[in-house]
Amino acid sequence: MKVLYSRVSSQSQNEERQIQNTDGFDYVLVDKCSGLIPFWERPQGSQIKKLIDSNQLTHLEIHSIDRLGRNTLDVLSVWKELSEKKITIICRNPNLRNIDENGKEDKFSQLMMSILSTMSDFERSLIRERQMEGIKIRKEKGLYKGRQIGTKESTEKFLSKPKNKEIFKLLQRGLKYSEIQKVVGCSPNLIKKVKESINISLSE
Picture 1: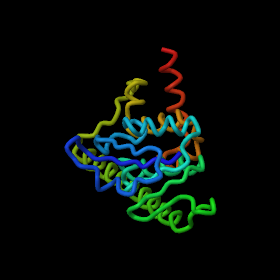
Picture 2: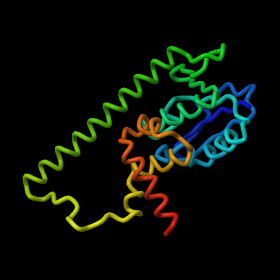
Picture 3: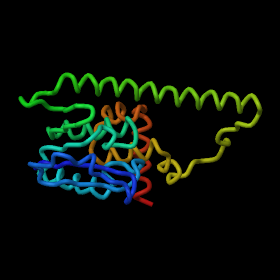
Picture 4: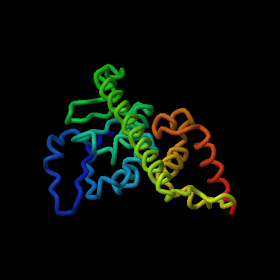
């Protein structure tokens, strides 16, 4: 089954530019929502997930690579998940595809995604660097105290953190620790802690 997917930010925005050449597609799906919403949580994105889970989707085509996610990490995660399921992804702008006509990994697209992955790692390291600089400055001014000794972070608060929420979603999808580490950029100990916290939350 072949699907052409498009996303625009608002109901008033015209998606026509993104859905040219629709011949041969079983479905043309358009989400009209913010790009900040993760791909699988969008109305049409969730429909695509159902097609994947029922082994019906074989081909997903998009206008541009940023239609798959709100940031580089999200894009890489969706691209990797679909590739592992041998679902062909074709991006029209720029011209990228994960699998070529012979069923083999497309080398040029593999290179481009590797560059994106490197940029994502660099972006994460910059964020961490800024955070540490901010903490250092606040410490020097006597404003940073961190968590007080003897206090304990609640399970709910721990799981609500953006990175931990992302780990939680990837665990639900059945990804291995090594795969989650690459996508999120975290330690195996954090993944283990998230998993244990989920179990605690479910038993409460």
